[in-house]
Length: 297
Image (tube, one colour):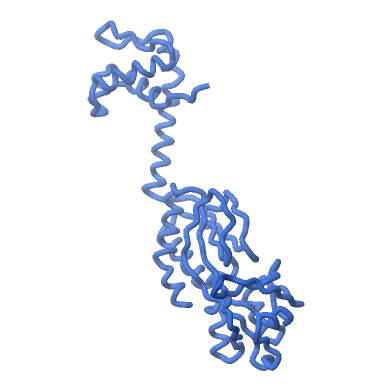
């Protein structure tokens, strides 16, 4: 079955509502010949004549009258729906669903979100934080903010790289008499891990290398992992900005290896390049204030 020709249907109803092709053409500021041709094409697609053009005024055929009686209200309702949808473009509103990692600039993210809500009072935000590695892409999220070291899983979604976040390995200074100095030694040292974490990635001139890691303590919260490292429970891998204060206070000390830990990349992922206005506004807000995040690095 062919899809309904809504444009042709709207044209037909509009002509009848105006009483003539000439009046409809004047109201829409389009040539009369164009409307007449489009009406004829619509009738051809339906395979039936809708209007008798032999008189000075329009006369509906039996088929035309039946179509107008049923479609007139429908076209009016569709027009009202289109007007309502257009209001979302002029005055963005509705729910915006976001997913971001638990360890992503917690304070700064909270500030960015509340400032956005203040600027757009008709938009509601539903935020969810994930733990661990790359989350699955779900359609009910408008934007996925994903931290990753390796390339993201291939998909037909749109991905936009936002920033690179340096990471380091840390240990309590009083426990550093047992600190590893090579990646081989690291693989046998107690580490504080997050869920499903079995290896840490490091950068070499020839590419990246994965080092297996083990530990007795697994915590999803980066703040808790940092506190556990301060208490001497092992080596922790953290974003440099998060550990900065503890390092400055002497509670943690970075470990040094010939190879540097691979930085994390922040990528935003969404379904389509044609973003709703509310989604586009939040993404622009985030990117316009990303310097605030860089200032922490």
